[in-house]
Length: 264
Image (cartoon, rainbow, N blue to C red; front, top):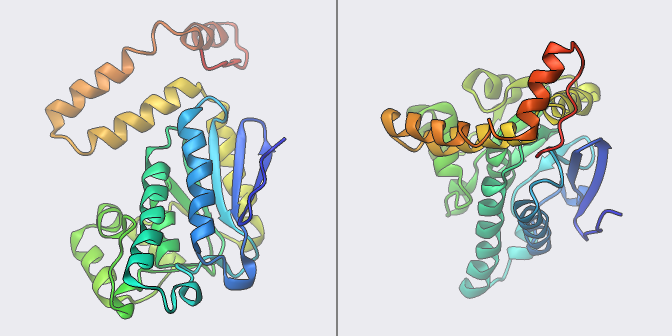
C-alpha cells in the first residue's frame, strides 16, 4: 500500500512506475511548507531504496497548473527566520530530487512558475501540455530563484537566454520551452499523461541498473572536463558486465525474446 501525504497523491500507473502528483489544486498546487516536507520524504525514500521503482512521473493535479510556485499567502507575515527555515526545507527537497538515482519525468500540465518551474527543471526531462506556461518570477518579488533555478535554467537554455529569463521574470510558452530545451515534447492536454507514461514504461522496461548508471554518468560527467568524464563513464560502465541483467539482455537478444530484467 502506498503511503499517503497531505499535499501529494501517489499512484502506480504501470509496473515499476511511480506517479507523484502535486495535490493542492485549489491554490494552483502552490508550494507550502508541508508540500516541501512531503516531497522531501518521498524523494529521500527513493534515494534510500532506488530499486523500488524504475521511473518516476511528476505532475500536478487539475488541468490549469503544474505548480504556481511558493504559497505567498502562507509566506505573508513570516519573519526572516521563518522564511529561511521554510526555504531550507525547499533546498533539501531540491537536493533530494536531483540526487534521486531513478529517472524523473515531468508532466507539466499547466503553469510552472517560480518554484514550480524550478521543480520542472529538476526533472531529468519533461513533456508539457500545449497550454503550459513557464516563468522564474522571483525577481518581481524582491528575491531570486533559490531552488536551483539560476543553475538549472542556464544549463537547459544557455547562459544568455537563461539570464534573460531570470532577470525579466517574463513568462514563456510551451512552444518556446520546447524550442529552448526546457522540455522535450509538447502534447495535447488530454494526451500528456499518456505520452509521458508511454516513455516511462519504455524506460522501466530497460535494464534498471543500466538506466541508473547512465543517469549518474551524465549528471556527474557534465560537471567535469571531457577526459575526466570519459574516465568516469568507464567506471560506470564496468559495473554492468558482471550483472545478471547483462547476461539476460544478451541471452534475450540471441533467443529473439523480450528481456526480463531484475535489477541484479
